[in-house]
Length: 483
Image (cartoon, rainbow, N blue to C red; front, side):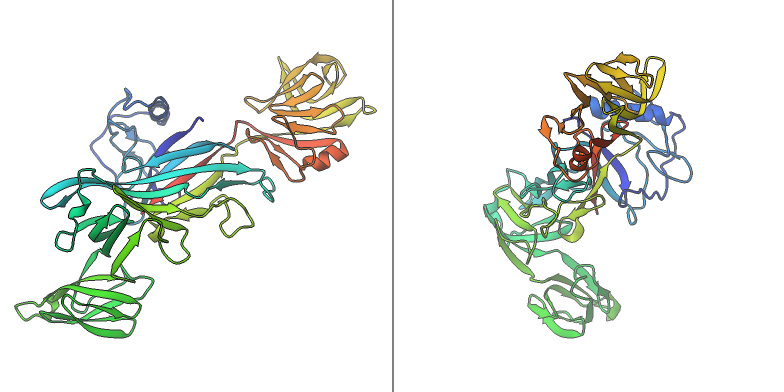
C-alpha cells in the first residue's frame, strides 16, 4: 500500500498556532522547492536531501501572518517553528490511506510528542520510551453507510506502551527502591513489579499553605491545602476537610491523599510552608495484565516483563453498536486525553459526473458527461456492441478519455461498458464492481478508487445510472494529536 506519513509541526485539531519565529536565516527557497524536497525525503526513505540547510519557512508549512525564517533539521526535512506550547499540540498526520486497505504503524518520540529518555534506578541509568501502535481500515459500503466513509478498528488495533530497558531488573523494585516514570503524561512511582503486574502511586504535587489546585483531581474537585506543621497537613476537597499526618493516607471527599512530606518554614512565615502530596482515586494502585483500566473503559492493562501499557478491547465496526466506527471528524482518545486520533475523511477534490441511459429506440447507451479523444471534445457519446460513437453516430473507437479525470477512461470491452473496475451491461440492467454484482445494492456505492454509484438497485431497475468520478483516486488521512 502506498502510504506516506508527514509530521505536523503544531496541531490544534488540525490548525497550527504559531507564537514566534527562529531568526538568523536569510537564504531563500520557494515553497515548491521545499515541498518537493520533503516529499522526496519521505517517499524515498532517505535521511536527508540536498537542499539549502537554512531556507525561509513558507506559510504552507509554518502558518503565520508574516513569513518566518526557520531552520531545516538534517535528519528530518521539516520546517521547524517556535510555537506557543500552551495553545498548540504536536502531532502527526497519517496520509494516503487507501479505501478498503488496512494500515499499520508504530509511533514514538521520533514522530509525535511521546518521550524517550533515561531514568535512574539504584544508581544506574536505563532507557525508557513510549510507543503508540495503530492499525485500522478506511471502510465504505457498510450497512447504512449511505455513501459515507468510516474508520474502523478491531479489538487490539490500538495500543500504548511504556517500554523499559531490557537490562532493568524489575525484581529489584520495592518500597525502598522505587521506580519513577511517566505514564499517560503523569508521573507514577512503582514500589512493586512482576512480569504481569505493577503496584504504583500517582506523581507528587507540591503545594504551599493556602494554595489550591485541580491539576491532578479535576474530575473530583478542587484540593485546598490549609495549615501545615512539621508533621501534618490540613487538606480539603470540595468542603470535606481532614488533617493528615506525614506518612499517612486518608480519604478526603472522593480522593485518597497521602502526605509524603510536610515542611514548616523555620523562619515562622506560613507562606513558606509546603507539603508534598500523592493524590488519586486510589493512591496505591495494583493492576495486573488484562485488568480493566477503569469502570466501563474501552482499554485494558497490557503488562509483560519489559513493558506496561494499554490495549483497545472494544471494536469500532458497526454503526448500530455502542462503539461505532469513526465518521469524518470523529475521534478516539487514550485516557487523560493523552493522545487523540481524529479521522479526517477522504480527500475529495474535483469530480466528474456521468449519466447513462438508453436512447434512440433503446439501441444505444447514451453517456452524458465530458469526454476527450485526440483534439475532439464530446458532451455525450453513444455505445453499442460495436463501439463508441459521437453525437452523429460516427464510430470513434472503443475508448475515450473522461475529461477532468487523470486515470479513468470510458471503454467498451467484450460487450460490457467499463469505467475503471466497474462493468455495466449494454442493457443497463446489471452492474459489477471488481467482479462483484452490486445490482441490488440500494445505497450509494463507493469503489476503492472513490467512484460513487448512486443507488445501483434503482439504476438497474430503471436502466439508468448516475456515476461521480473523482479527479484522482481518493485517499484518507488521520491526525494523531498529543498533549
